Length: 134
Ligand code: HEM
Image (cartoon, protein in one colour):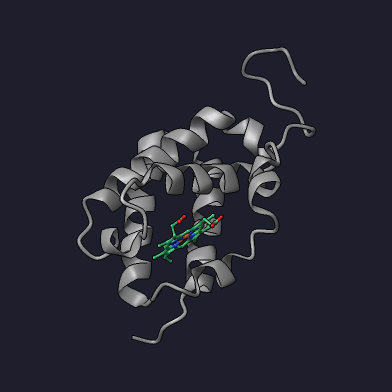
């Protein structure tokens, strides 16, 4: 671990470079505020309380980017396409999901290279989750 503030090294994971857990929690918190107010997405979430879904997405993203492996300790292998199969992820759902993610990402004020790397992943992952042609 590097102790010098502001200095990054090759050994740092992307997770560490962008600010660790706090950054991913802020991203997902803001994202779910958007979902909570979205007339298309909100009814797709089976639980009344969005808190547990927020926790799962935060832990997944933290793990994906090199943080702790808590997601898989609790949930096993992600198998995200399979886990989305019960939900109709069509173009409209995809667009709404990404719109809230874009808003959440913008709220973080990350360095441009981090922001674009995260966005590239999120757009790729969202496209791969589409499971309905409508
Ligand atoms: C494209 C539009 C998407 C829609 C409409 C959507 C919708 C949903 C819904 C309704 C759930 C169930 C809520 C829950 O119980 O957790 C869910 C779960 C989840 N989604 Fe998505 N999702 C989308 C894309 C993505 C993407 C791109 C990712 C990853 C980058 C992702 C990661 C997750 C994770 C980690 C879970 C929890 C899986 C589990 O452990 O059960 N989703 N999603």
